[in-house]
Length: 328
Image 1 (cartoon, helix red, strand yellow):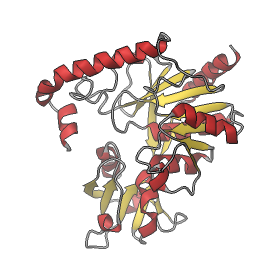
Image 2 (cartoon, rainbow, N blue to C red; image 1 turned 45 degrees about the vertical axis):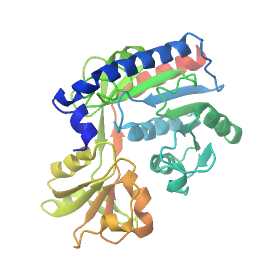
Image 3 (tube, rainbow, N blue to C red; image 1 turned 120 degrees about the horizontal axis):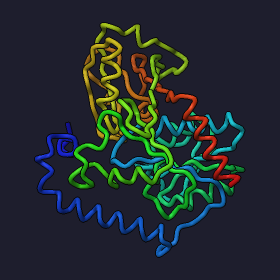
């Protein structure tokens, strides 16, 4: 476990020296939000309905599969969604950047390419979400914009806020940065429209999202499929450079697979050497990691796509909220 995780999700004692700084961070965060919501600092409308999908904690919580699910739901309902995101770890020399399935991961970031591939929706990334929205609308006829992350990007006005919560780790020790993993306190959930729990047992007002993934795809040839059950009882090298690698490893363990765990930092820039383990055992990775490893893929490299599953009642409630925001 990396040092930050041991502090944020451990017994809490190691966080004690950081608590005064955490209180300061929480106070400044509240003041910043108040400045935007009260109009002291200007926020900007982009002229379309904006749905923000975010979280309260640093690191992965399941936003990406939810954004894919949401985009597909909107398309099925007859909307024309576009997507904006930060483009985290992208190294483009200028922003915003349009994203398509063939975009260079090194320029626009791994999650952006994955979302573009899975949704087929127009997408623009950049640190300034308002500027990203304007570029998106300049080139595409979108009637709804999904902001992947951006809950704390208050310069962009939004119509719906959806927060994704990790059902296992939830809010860690409950402190804001740097003593804990929180960007804003849990009380912020009282002001959002919908709360989605990624696995776990829901509390009042939460809807559970389950991630389903049981068919591996060949990294070198994605048309090659292998049911996860075929590896039951076998040993694989499991590679994960995501916010919570343990979630991926637990998924494989639950399928009866013996796992040699190889966790990497979130958004790790993989090289061919990272996937060399001195044997021919299958190497299994997440889909987010796969978009960065295709250049040096081998026949025994596989990735596991996951799809969000949410009950129909939630989808119906979401569409009702959306129509209310659009039509008043």
